[in-house]
Length: 204
View: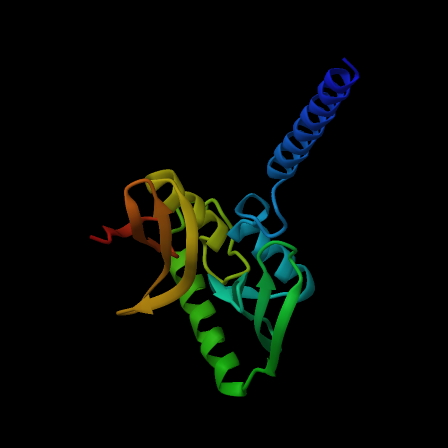
């Protein structure tokens, strides 16, 4: 009889222990492991964090894996300096920084681009001098900022931006995005002057 009681008590203890382990495991899964996808900064959040410390226009940003960690690799161009940095995609910490002083030719090229942008804005003014482009020039030097262009692209195809870059072709400046969507990886190009979508293409 005593053996039966002892055996029953042992089974009860083992059962409680197993339930406790199961609950602990479930809690751990619910919280998510450090560095998990749910904790990853969005491309917009990564841009904001970087620009808080390194003011300027984000020319390129890409999510990549470096030594097993997800990082945002980006290029920021300010008035005096150009920054190439890597930002931890989960913590927001800058893990690599390369700061270079801009050359006179680079500054001159940007001034030329800004002059072209202002000329385009003037040509879009109405008879009363009202600018048809309601938005003022963004930090990128174009009527449409990268954040606005991202929103335009996501409104069209949905998904998550994997890579963003300001580019130029045949005198037309545009934002080039790689976006992970439900229909596969899409490339979307948005005109930096007008906000119009130039190209949408999906990888086979």
